[in-house]
Length: 326
Length: 301
Image 1 (spheres, each protein chain N blue to C red):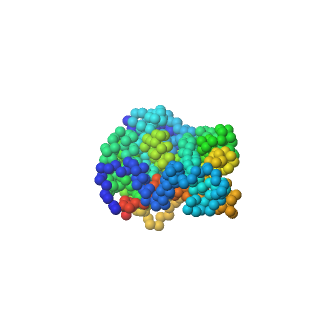
Image 2: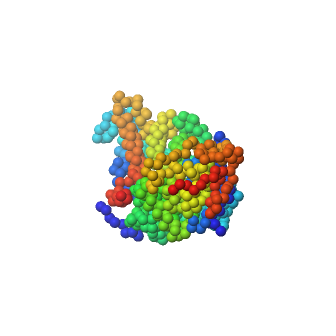
Image 3: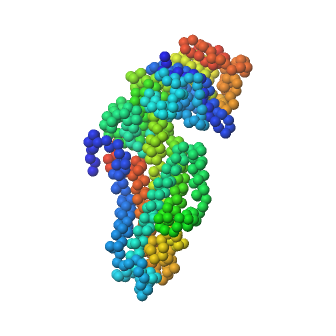
């Protein structure tokens, strides 16, 4: 049984101009210990999917529905707010994009770590403090016992993200959601953080949902990738398959706009033209159609169904795309 | 001097304690604190210090300039300005402090609730606040004191009621801004409940503007008390208060400037002290403004 099974997740927001379908029928499974990438451009519904799983979407104006969303045997949508609080931070945790802003500036690092430990693990003050030091050492912060008294502004972005990871992993969650966790960091630090997450989650068998628009990072880290567009998953594939045989016009566009260090030096990046679609009145057709370069006649007639491509690889696209040139 | 702390001490546990250690390093704030304490002591021990009875009229000695006998001169009834100053401090300081306390107790929770809950609660509370803010503050205070009866407790109450909405509105604004911070969502993602969010995340981060606003409230209260007394509410005639004496002294500005200088100086000193104190308090409560002697080698380079 998968750790997390999401079926037909829909998250909508009521606005003055109509209902925004931020997530529109997302279904996927996440196995124990699996690292799942969620890629797509801004506004494709990646973060809202994560917030919906964490039950952090403010309702109203938001509204989260799903046929089911079971995590470790419990249906997340049936939890009361108080029950959800017990789950958050304990068995599922989240790391956010901007490490400069995700720690409270007026509380010391130690206090913020200890607070979570005391909250979920009912540790005493001394025990929590010892554990906090271990956690900081675990994420590679030197002089951990001294750093407990430090404040976020005394840390660099990379160190703050390490602290966030330490806090997120402090209660040994079974699921870690990283929402663009390395986007705000420079490349060297990015690589360090990715390695850190890889190592720590492998050691513990933690499942990870890694949200990113950086396919390079995803390739390095994930077992499987879901490509999102307009609030839907348009392609899902094991990581290798996705790069070798992208089977959706949008995936193709994403890959075409990603620089490759091993490619020809003068290869031009081809950006995806146009803008992301309006999520208030979606087309009854494929949402990517107006921007697609590989569309076929069928695309203009009806919406594509999920097409199975074998090896747990599927895409919602009519175009028959062969393997990608290396 | 940098002294290494034994690692067993949970230093991080008390950010208040750390703040308390920071405060004395702010020199202006210490000066402010000392001045304020002296002013309070002087007011408290007025009967022991004052050389004259503050209300005793002695027309033969009216409008005397400062001398050894009358340190700050005498007023138009021959009363000793210095003695009146000491006794007046009792009224003015207690008005200032109590109005601050009242505005804090009423305004801060209101503003936090409004900012945190948002939506309908916010709407309701803020319309209430708007209703209070539509009245000119002094007029509202006069109306309230008129309703409750003219005595000094009622003046404090009225001024508190007038100031609380101003504070509430400001706290709400700051809370709304802080509520959208990523660290608030992050805290929720770690299982923090509403109580924790409001106290350790929202309140702790809106303390600075609150402290600043409270120093303004203090100054406003002292001056407003003067206006109310001048209008016949609040302190009744022979009783001294800084504001009251100041407004009376205006009439003699040309002939007896000392009458004016005494209470004005006291109010100024007091408001300045409070402002410095507020500055220091604000800095002590914000780790980013701390002056550390032993800087934690923070940057990983």
